[in-house]
Length: 360
Image 1: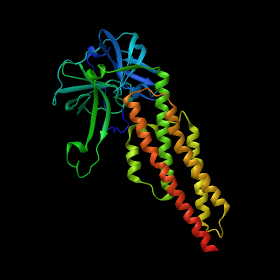
Image 2: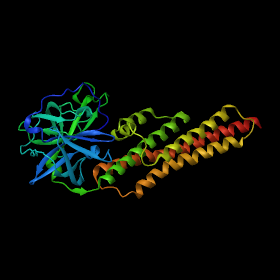
Image 3: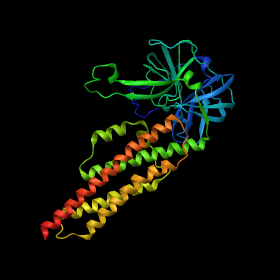
C-alpha cells in the first residue's frame, strides 16, 4: 500500500463470510505484510496481490483465513499496473470470480484484507465514487496492510485490487471539496488481466525494489544535506518528495543494496561542516584546509549525484509501468542536484575570495 496512508481509525476483526475463508489471503514476509486473494481466471487458480507487496520481501508466505498455507509458482508481474499473480501449486483454496457487471458510480463495494498488517481478516464497506479504464476509486477506508485486498461488488465478485491512497493538499482549488480528503484507488482487475504479464524471479523483483528504495532515500538525504548547509533548502520540494509513497517506505527500512552511498552522504556533510567551521573563524589568508574541504565536498556530492543514475542505466529493469515511473521520478530527483552543487560551490568560492581580499 502506498505509504502515504494515514490510519484514521482502528480496524476491528469481523466475521468473514464462510465462502471467503478459503479465498482471502494474508501475505507476510520478513519486512512487510499485506493482502492477497485467490482468483479463478480461464480455469486456473491464481494468487493476486500488488507487486509492491510481494517485492518488499525476499520470501513471502500466503495463508488463507482458514489457515491453509499455499505454495506458488510462475510469478508474473503486470506490465501496466502495480499487480502480480502466481499460480497456486498446492493448498486448500477457493478462487473468486471476476466481476461480470459494468461498474457504476454509487455501486456498493466491500474490501476484505489484512488491515494494518495485523494478521487478521477485516471487512470495510463503501461505494464506488470514481471509474476509469484502469482504476476505480472507492470510499471504503482501506489502510496500510490492505494492499492486495480484493474489492468485491454486491455479488461477491472481484471488481478491483486495493492499491494506493492519495492525500490531497488543502489549497485554494481543493479546499472544501471532496478532493481535499484522502482518496483510495484500486486497479480494475478485468482490464489488468487482459494486459501483458511478464515472468520474473522473486529474487529479481525484491532486489530491484530494494535498490529503488535505497536510491530514493539516498537522494533525499543528499538534497537535505545540501540545502541545510547552503540555507537554500526548498521545504516544499522536500515535503513533496516525502509524500511520495516509495520514498516514505524507504525511510522505514534499512539500506539494502548500496550502503556506501549513505556513507558518502555522511562524509560529504562532514567535509562541508569542516569548511563552514573554518570560514566562521574568518581565516586571515586563503587557508588550504578550507579549499581542500570544499573541494572534497564537491567531489563527494557529485559522486553520489551521478552514481545512482549510472546504476539505473546499467540495471536490466523489469519493463513495467511501476518500475518505469519510479526510475523517471529518480531522474527528476537527481537532475537538479548537479545545479545545486555548482551553485553551492560558487557561494563557497565567493566567501573564500571575499575573506582573502579583506585580509590582504
